[in-house]
Length: 304
Image 1 (cartoon, rainbow, N blue to C red):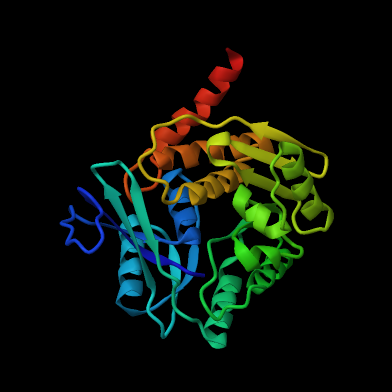
Image 2: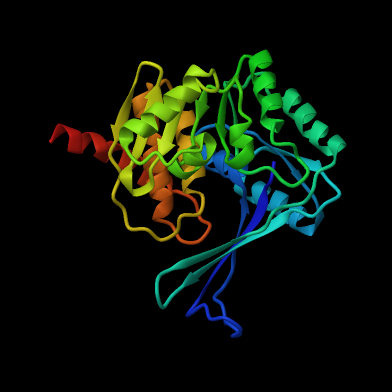
């Protein structure tokens, strides 16, 4: 619901008030759900992206999706699609990410997004909503998507934050919060693993999701269901950029489930995609060979 034209570049140093000469820019279609569709395609699956976009940035975003061969439906809006700007500082290796809020969407534009979704879910196994909501969109918007998924027989995967996450009530099959997002959702610190699992199982008991995958960054992930939980070890890779890593994880988890993987192996596949995206520069997403290698390596280590 809040796509972006992603722009990535580099500079020797990021210094206040100074004019910084940057390297060649890279342009990518961005935003949570769009990144999910891109990664599904990279990994050999099929996805269809539905999104609102307007203005020059919105047209550029659509052109980049066409370049990448991602099937999609753009919902025209009066507002101008946001741009997100990422700068890699060569001197320190640090990355600076500037994320704009996005355009306001009218009630008619929001309804048009849901109506377009209805037109494209007939054969869908999963509906994935990933990312933030733009201004003027009520935080309970994803309830409508959950209802639509239920009517269509598709499973609903949700990756969002803030009030939109707190407003989740029912109809979600898999929820993927980060630890910070889960803390904000339940209003507690969740310092221990037991507290993290307890918070996730509270949401499951309330009917807000059947499965919760908590991404823990360098600590790996927690897979939680009503029956129990499993901690999955992190995948150690050299980090070049964190842009799109969470979206890549969601994409590969969903694709893994479509391909018949059980929950553990689907989440491991998702972690491999997230780690592979960390290895790529700027706004580039994962590479299929890297994902498959990192996924296989998890089981080699287990066997050893």
